[in-house]
Length: 509
Image (cartoon, one colour):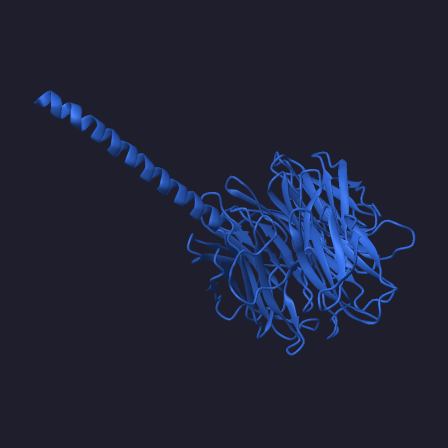
């Protein structure tokens, strides 16, 4: 009897074990699907501004969202201004927002950088004007893991204090190295200062290069892989080099040399390192060709000795295409998945009420070969400020939208998945186009800028009757429309295997 019982219960246990394995597999699959959905989560956040507002960088919150230092200032955009206060804006992976606000008695202040410390907590930097002071101070504050203020230091300077801003923060153990840019009004060019501080904001060493020889415009700082050097990328007139250059400083903050950089006629730099030790540079420069005079978004690759490995540009002949105005224009967490951004159809400031622009959102591989380039907006003037790749695989672009009713930029953040698309089902989503057409209205030719492979453009009447189709080059294609009668038409973009990708309207004059 016992033998029979053992014999009968063994298959039962096997069935139970098999059933449990199936349940575990299903649960694991559901977890993977949920995690994948979270990893591909996207959002759009538009925050109307009631005062002049700005943000120039953000960090990954580790959960698919961002933490961005924000600032409120007096006046209108493109006018005179002074500080009011700053705060931290947290946008979750689902687009929910929360803020952390601070007060230093009656001190007005401006936030520039936030850095996550390796052992927990954050360092927050900015500029401040304490009561009774007419000069700006360098502000350094410590936050705990919940963003509560633990301490704050305000370091004053007697000269060149119109701007005293931390440009980057490099951590080596318990020491922070901060490249700082300083200038006097009107701040056409800045001088670099390097400070070493401990984890409580106490300055351990300070070196200020207060000499016209070391004056530059909008520098970008990068720490070498071995952390022994700091590179300063400048577009002109640094260290005796008249054109673009990079300068080398050792870990003791001593200036070593300045070397020409092989990207002529370029400006508005931002730099980063890939996980496989390649230096990426985003910048603005004129597009190739003797007959053109407009600007394009450029990306360049350098090895650790800053030898040029390759470069590529994106833009059209009839628009000014700029990299982000203040912050990062390129970034990656994987060497073969490099995100970049900029904005198309830039203009002099302030933009006119009829002038619109498009946010450029793209991805290239490790050799800067384009995977996609999308155009977002076209309904207002957007000015891209920075891009941030996130650890969940997506990336965020901050591109404020100018509001002509208030003369202020409303804060706009958009998170895209790794394919550069929005997956949210929320209504009112901004349009993401794979192709850009200009001019519109058009007379003889319609230029179609499209980076899709094996794409085709079809011109149709508004009723849907096809007039002609045209194979598109990967880049810019001129569609002849001289024989079309004046009026409005449809332009459909399609690819092999996917059919119609998107539809545009255009006017033939």
